[in-house]
Image 1: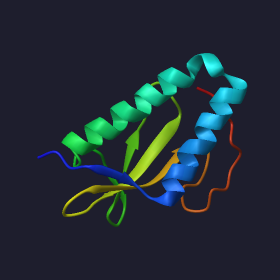
Image 2 (image 1 turned 180 degrees about the vertical axis):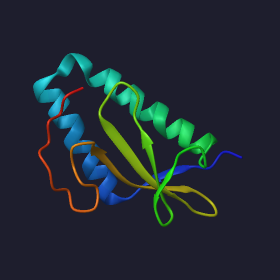
Image 3 (image 1 turned 90 degrees about the vertical axis):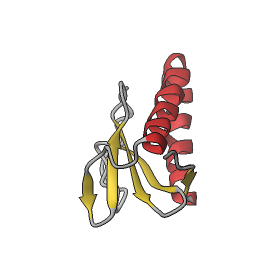
Length: 102
């Protein structure tokens, strides 16, 4: 069963921050980054239980080719993405140095 993926406002902000960094610092890989994020969302949508549970009901999917994680919850009718963060950052607090290496 495929579930729609919905991003919280915090996840939208996370993604915008990452895209802005790539646009400013490595524009030649921005399209690839966006493709890999879309691929991660697609896999999560089609196989939500594929990825490990990291805390209570929160799961983490690693983004291929880029050092980012997608944190999400499986709800009855959709997938709720709660964070899209660089792996050097703490997803609960946002602390950590944002390296932006991809």
